[in-house]
Length: 349
Image (cartoon, rainbow, N blue to C red; front, top):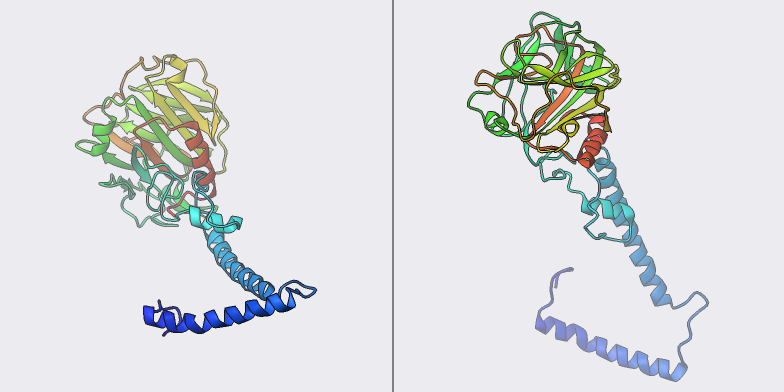
């Protein structure tokens, strides 16, 4: 019989027969002489304990190596799952699936995929102007075409993260795609809940409002996230600036969220903004805040543009490393968790 194979019934009987005899003889010896452990305890028990401990050490080492690999990419351990062993590192390795996110999105550990409409990592290159479009990771995909417009916009490596950079404000460089006939247009048309998520580093801004994210035709913005100065973030809705927020945009990579939920009763709650997970204080509304229940004001000519508006001349000097669009209002817990992930690495896992 090979080691590790299951014995047949005949083999089992042939193996067990001599064992029974040995057990009976051993018991008679114990009865006659008494159970006398040595000073260190039973030799047999000590040997088994040592063997078990050695095996546990091997398992733990293997698990720790796996956990170290996952630490920079995996989300938190699911608290609903019981531990796989008494070793904490083994628990982590058995609870975290490195191929799944918090909502089961393959390849995006920890990033929410529920209601996700589009996600662009802007990591197609680390330098130059070779890529022709940004690749959307959400099927069927909306891949904005890149317009470099000279040397002012190009790919760059910023603090170990790839993205697009602009060397001046008011440039034509951008990445745009028509929304006509797309699944994103269908999802946004009349949507009452939307979230925009971007990673930026800001050097200078256009006083007319540099665009980080823009939906609109030409020089107009149906819905946009913009900033005219470093201490102010603004949201445009139906070609008007309807909400501004106090903030402090910096030259370092930072995560910005704008959450729209027009189902909210209070007008000030219908458009919210977060800077690195911290809720921003709104200033007085500049225009008409969306009415309760109002949907995103799309037009048939709208284009989705990153880093500018579709007509150009609203770039910012700085870096755009990531952008995502959700057809729902992200929860604060998800926003904070995304900040932790994207602040560490905004490229595709």
